[in-house]
Amino acid sequence: MRGLARAFGITSTAGFLIGALLSCGRWSPVYPHLSLAAAVRAGMIGWVVGTALAPLASRRRWRVAAGELPPPRGWVRAAAGAGILVALLPAVLWVAAASPGGPVRRALFGGERPGDKRPNLIFITIDALRRDHLGCYGSRAGLTPNLDGFAEQATRYEAAYANSPWTLTSFAGMFTSLAPSECGLKTPAAENQAWYERSAVWPDDIRLLPERLHQAGYATAAVITNPFLQAGRGCSRGFETFRNENVEAKFAKGAARANVVTRNSVGWLRLNRRQPFFLWVHYLDPHSPYDAPTTPPEIRAEYPPQWDTTRNYWAEAVQRQDAQTRRRYQEFCRRMYAEEVRYADQWLGKLLSAIKASGLYEDSLIVITADHGEELFDHGGIDHGHTMYSEVLSVPLLVKWPQGTRADARIRQTVCLTNLTPTFLELAGVRDRQGVRGRPLPRQDGGPGDQVYAEGLLYGKEQTAFVTDQFKVVYHPFADAHEEQFEVYDLQRDPAERHNLAATDATAPLRQQLAKRSHQAHALAQQWQQKLAAGSSRFRLSEDAKRSLRSLGYMGK
Image (tube, rainbow, N blue to C red; front, top):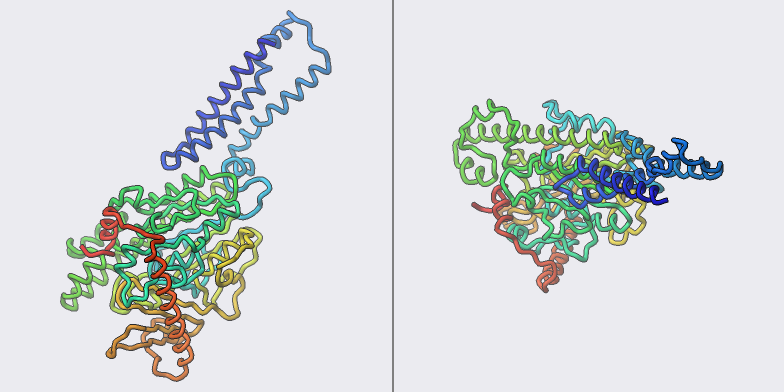
């Protein structure tokens, strides 16, 4: 017995060390807590394997084999053999886990927890991505082969809209299903820029989608960029793992490219827990300034070396130049923006490949969209947050449903990104919808679309908008006597929004409805401002954050 006990101690300890050592190949300095859990799990499997092998290493067994001791009785041999087989079962599981797409590996290292068949939820967003630059939406530039390939296996929503024209307020709508004025992200002032940059937060008493999913048993993680999406603004609530690559890199310029986001997202996927998960991945590319590292040098060589693509550069330098210079600069911006789209698509393709290699692709809900589009001088301006035109509010929306879910390949009716929260909750089987507005995204084409309400302008005097299947109405509540108070466009006949129909009687009901909704939003914003002024949800912008915002052109130099 003494020899067997010694063998148990030696082999079990060796098994634990070997298992933990093998798991070091998957160690990630980005996720040390998950890496440590994986090492302990692998070590425990090794310990069980080592324990199972202990009888083979005991001195008594070898003495029996050499004839020095009499063999044990039959029932003892049978019991010992059965025990060894049971103890060796983890070793079989270890070998089976080597298959990347196998069910055992998925159970051990991520994706599916035995007995919990709810789908994983993967939410991929690309900042400032224009819908018309994707091949699946009609572009012939060949910029997005990976997105186009994904679209072939997904539902393509052809009339999807954000409910705000810039990042912080748009994501608030996606994660709450509410308008900015309903969740404390709008002030009653005519202009909101200073307040948004320095004070705006997602209030604690509004439940976010990741909080609901985490409470329902989902592992939650975010690997994102954009200095506006900070933990201090409430964006990390509900996430067990939250990485804003701008913050992690101390807001260093150029540190938050798509390659970093993809690498760290794939690292999390390899180490994720065994329960169903919600993973949010946000790429900052192709946000201005447009400067993709893969931009061909011959494109840059065609233009003056001092040109850049920040909104401040356009407003302060180029706009004062002659018409020919402005046209050349506009061409420069469009070409540089296109290269940013191409670069983001390349790294998105690597992420999708990793999801497929992990065996998670088929049974997951994967949503790809943008928080807003981008102005490229369609109506005279550049960037976003200035207007409510379709180049900013209209976004791509591609949804790959879990295997077995019936859905059409194409949905033409109008939908809003605020529908995402009820969609995720429905797929996750979360019945508690208290405070959730709207309905899940439609899966069949046809029927009436949503009436999208948008607000929360970042720059200039406040604007609001309604989008229906046929019309776009824009309201300027703070317009002076020399400005148009309403803009109305027929999206079926005038998708470029060139001909203002505000003077026609046919659109009067829509104008009245938007004005009424806008006044209600103003009253809500006043209530939220009083509440926030009382001391809740305070936020202080750090100097690093200010530098990062300036590098993206948000704040003055």
